[in-house]
Image (cartoon, rainbow, N blue to C red; front, side, top):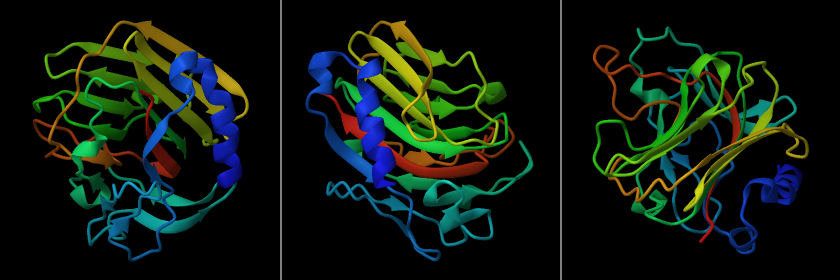
Length: 242
């Protein structure tokens, strides 16, 4: 995984302003190589932003420390019935306030693969929660990156192409004061497949909802659908760019 991360770092300036790209600081680095049976999603950044894994994760399709073909070691989320199964144990939660960007320039990147054209990959906050929201999802197989302030100022962007083809992809989304840029690379992080940009500030994001991977933090499949992710994630990184 170290080689992949280095290649991605070389490619990131495509979507960053030069001044901000010079000295990003890592907020969280989840390599997702924790052993099966672990209750902790370890943060290797040194910032202490570990996540919490529910006790029944194996029953609900999340396999820790699984060898991913072409992807080292990561997490796997198994199949569920859309909008029927309520399995909160599938969702990994990192509750730290440090994962809120506030007004800072912010970057979230991850390496994933899936064959399912739906699901919330990860998010910080939820639509009705106070303080704003960050969300990555896969509507019709297209990758969507959204930042919304506590006052409702929203900047959302999604790819033109679909990325639910079962191949590895590296996704990098940068939230700057001037707008949001979404880049999608191949699985090695070297070939840029698509870039999308939307202008405008998304304000301040500061909520008390955990950063979650694998679906929504609060849902019941009735008035709030869970939108669980199905597939593999190799790593997730959160960086402050300013």
